[in-house]
Length: 420
Image 1 (cartoon, one colour):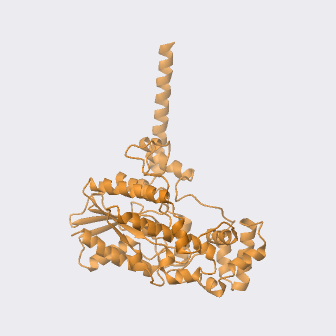
Image 2 (cartoon, rainbow, N blue to C red):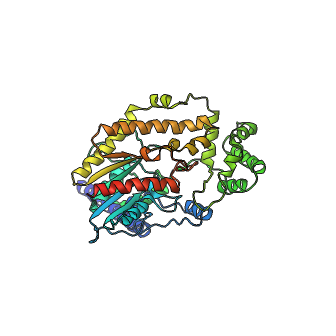
């Protein structure tokens, strides 16, 4: 009896291993090649790229073999390169709405300064956080033999509540790559496919949408405000806020007048895209009765010390990981749009919605204060962006072409300092 049970256990285990190997083999055929599946936890959004290229035909979004918005790179450092820097971060590096991603601009400035021997490799992936940054560096970045890592930390959404668990954390069954998981350690291609099928990655998660939302918004914005605004009001009432009177929605969305409407007209670069989630946020915040901070001082008082500490634990772990390999780290702390007077003026009619930006500006100040006592090398980009008009996009809080150039100038200088 015992011998038979042993046989069937061994047979079952073999069957499971064979089945998993077969699934992994099939997944390998349709998964991005290494290191793409480690770098990008979800495919580049085809709809988003079509929207960018359709609205701004001069903006070309193309990825290399690593699935990054960058020129082609090699795993080994080229012979003519004396200093290799990796740029790790989220959509601020990926650069979906801009003419060129930030690392490409930095590398261009380095070439212009006669430093063709310095690389600025883009490892920026939208929808990721310092948790992914740490594992992206650990699981891939160190294999590229970098001399330095520039970690772009966005104060708007990069703080986390989960503290660094140490070098040997307990692993969930499945998690988006490059985060460790049981399935990921034995079947990474299957993991990549499963994460996307189940929409488990930060980049794949989305909110509610109205049917044909993009087309409805585009049609409305192409009309004069008096004709287009009722279309937006009807859509938001029907699919987002059925319990709110249309008159209330109309009053909120009409506060910006023609200035709001004109902001979404087609242009060659820096086109703003009005999306349902933005309208949802504006209406939700402006009709909410939850007390919100309305001044910088009130926002500072609401900052969670635990959240700042948890976030710092990942940045400190990243610093230690790189120091152990003799790699330099520079954290570039990115402020939110309150730096840009034009951004602040645009959102003035919606003070409760703007409150979110005030809160994230407070998070920026808290992170800068924490980094100042950490011993980690960092640069506060607020020093370069504060008071410069037209550096932030109004709707998605990312940099405009001007904003990218301001930051590229500063970071090119910083990279050259690291290379000394």
